[in-house]
Length: 160
Image (tube, rainbow, N blue to C red):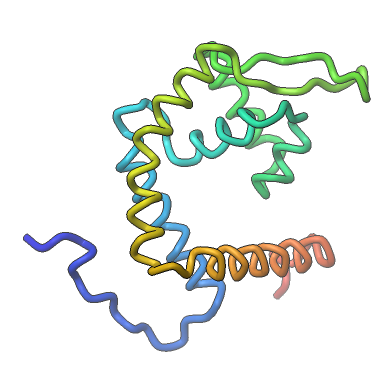
């Protein structure tokens, strides 16, 4: 049986930039999930651990970074806390809030998962043939456009 990468991708008439982005997202999630399965983290979880490994964030900041509702972030936080992988730190800027950071155990899990992530990243970058920077600029531009549309019309999903 041929690998999925060896199968032709059908050209579907009527697709557009949003569907193309969705397809890329699905392919990236599948690659990440496959690479990370033995680490116990999903691709989404690895992404959150990665951002928290750089600096503590409030749930609101994490929600903005993820383009996700606070309820989604709350469910992630509960799951990560139950694992002992994140902890809450007081927020010096707002006593009503807190910042999330990885615990030592969370950082260790993230580091082990990163070793599984890196070969896939290197393979994708190699397959891009040196165009990584251009692809990242295009993706950043697309994300900025999406966020701009969402912030200008928060009810954009209610058109009809």
